[in-house]
Image 1 (spheres, helix red, strand yellow):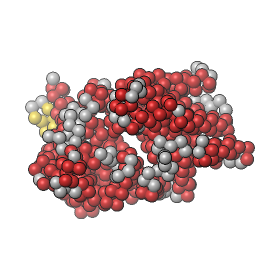
Image 2 (cartoon, helix red, strand yellow; image 1 turned 135 degrees about the vertical axis):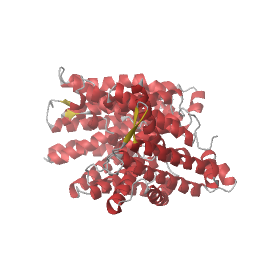
Image 3 (tube, chains in turn yellow, purple; image 1 turned 180 degrees about the vertical axis):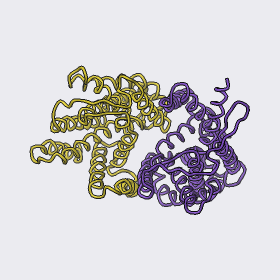
Image 4 (cartoon, one colour; image 1 turned 135 degrees about the horizontal axis):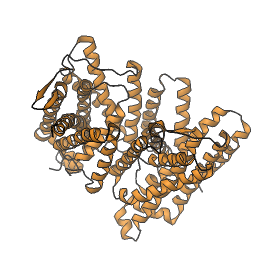
Length: 293
Length: 291
């Protein structure tokens, strides 16, 4: 492991001690959101960073996961619902993945975005998903366990990124990113490997959505299939450094915390400042803050 | 039968507007490879420009189209030279994020100036309509349709018949080749972005005439511009026409037969289906340069 990666694991350890050290619900909430964005960015990194496929609508699985646990939460216990929020998105990804992954670059990005928006329209119009009323959930516990769940999910995503970065499996993905035809000719089963990466992303993002639904206790189509969330994920990923293990974490925390600070200090012009901030950071770090070697 | 005819006409008229509206989006995507997420908000800025002019000096929003176009050209020039040119050479998704940042800043900026209330431009002919056989035609929709077609024709002429237009197609087709014969890609990119933004601003005038608007309408407009570009393909100006009318018809028919709530869903499913069968859109052709 590199120095940065060890440093990051240390930071995760420190984050684990935060609820013991400070009793501040507000800080905990901001950190929980940042950890959620971290997981989303790391999950997308598996696909965009290592495999070269930009799933711009990957947040579709966030919504599917949230709705899977939302619908099940009425009759089943918390853990079953969370399990469903991993399984259902993975199954959906298994259905659509092999088809969508035939598309490349911008076209893939837009097809996945269309998938996200069409799911959003669908749950908004179907009866068992609550229609435009959305779904109310009963949180099984307070904020601190949610903080730890999101933290564990972020650490898990980070370890998965570390694995992909160093393993033979990851080398195959990187080969696909660099040149898919060449990878195929060297014996990489590109269709299989791409799909596996896609499934990994979908399940992580799905669990993230399931946890989010229980944490926020209310979901509707505009909140969990929000294109703004897709874009935030990509900003975090590209800002931090795509295709690196540490970059997405740095990007997510930087974006979430600066957005929060701007929101608290100047609520009226928060949007204008946040937009300008994103533009400014991009002009300063056009290659991302952390660069891959 | 009459009902179907009525829906066909409605869809066609709406489609004409969509075609022109999406033209600038398809242009910057096809030529520069930029997906401009702030495109919808550019359209909304055009609508507010027309609104302001109409409120202050009573200029008809149709007559102020050239003004909006010029404002758009200047704005696009600035966006290109100040922001996009600096990061175009890096990871292509960086520009996407940049335009997203721009989108947040601009839409919230509009919200600061105009507040979030729905605004509309009251033109004297807004209410008038007439019968053609069994079909009712609203004057505003017909007017917007005709003007969209004329403007689309002008863009077609520019891209296909002028030197600069041909230079744009040359760069889109083969950047190195165009450079070899003395076309400067940097110049072409600036012109493309200026033209694209000009189209966005001026279609804002039409949008403002068609319906009420708020500072945050941009997102849905960007999605529709996406849809039109994908449905038609990025190949030519005419393909935007196909895509726009396709979207207009699908929205009108689904809106009527299945329900207003489902029309976006169907348009999206249609788009995924077309992408899978013909990844380069109905009309094919990857770049503006391919004849």
